[in-house]
Length: 482
Image (cartoon, rainbow, N blue to C red):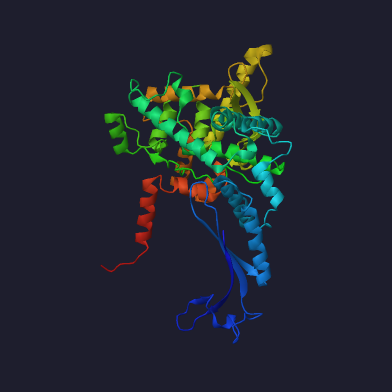
């Protein structure tokens, strides 16, 4: 690496209107020497290419003197001189680029040597060993988050990276893991299309456990590794995070679609469902609720369909969280399934814990449901299990969320309505609110989304009639004579 230092300024050429840059005539005095006060010193050089071969030109300015710019350029040269192999140069280049992007001082040579030839207490720790140590130390994690981390470590991170020492892990290793995951995905899809095809792979296990890791799942795998390596950086085991700059395919969220008459007809003819996220119309929602009105879970399905609670939040709703006189409901708990055991936890996020307004019909149904529950408690006597929950089994015990989903699917099949997921009732509650005249901010508060952008991006195009009504209202405002 050579590199050079130079001076430039922000003066503009009056003839072209463009900055002079390094060609400003004021930068040098008549004798050819640099002007002592005009302009600032900069340097430029070329760092070693990234792990995927991309060039890394580096320019940095703001130095008061040429000596200052030369000194930093010399420090970069000294750091890069420590590399014996191209891969080492890439790692030191990552170290330098990371420090500059974070606006930190350049790393010293001791940090670079630790990166290349670490001889500290953690030298022999493998990625697999560190992932176990890191996860065991995360005592404040939600159990669902811990289980998701553990699954990603067991299924992906350990098989692909577990044998590599933490101090030697590079972005190239991480990128190779995701290449292997995508190759497995393609082979598995080919197997599903033709199980007899000889692909050099064995897919003789449960197909549900071999579900391909799509873009969203790969982001979660990356997030788990990035969090573990950030902890390693805090312990000074490594000087950069190899998971940070790996490019992954974009995640495209499916937007809800309404089951219009045309889509329903096509579904009845071919069985084709046009989107993973489908939403019933108001008429279809009403038909479902009419059909299930005598079901013990009717009040729960009505609440989800009209007020947009999540399944676990409905299962975890406590009687103490209802104020039916004030027509409000407070979400404070959710039921989660962990290794088939039911646990009561806080809601999904801090923003999910909120008070929701109820309509009078829903409040009346909940009051009738609680009265029926009181009758069940009285008949059960000492056999009643007191949980304080609104929706329970006949003896007061928690309802398993999976049963709520299974009964929902059975009821849809009984009605002949087009299919939706139970979670899609939450989307339906949003579209009903919009169709009823609620604004996006009100819908955001009802669903407890973290940002109004999420609500707007998800629901503004769902109900065609809402868009048509808005178009007609706008057109009606324009006075016409003919």
